[in-house]
Image (tube, rainbow, N blue to C red; front, side):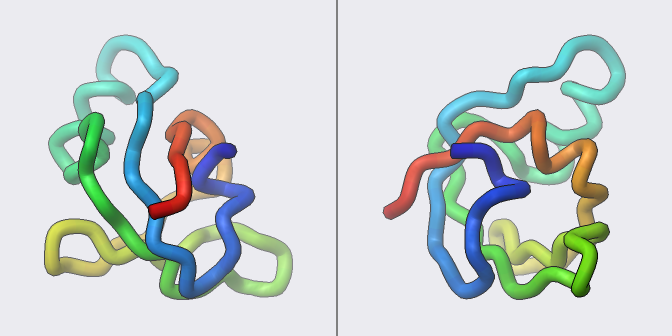
Length: 74
């Protein structure tokens, strides 16, 4: 499943980031690395952006970027 499809409140683990170049680096710098656990805190009505908690901090992620992060439920 991709992060964009994870329901709010769900704890998930990053399985893979399917991006290249600067975008992949940016996502990894934000904490989206293989094995990292994160929680989808909330979504706005149209699903963009997502509110995600990673490694003790909160961030907003565009749906387009969240569709590049493959996750599995914990």
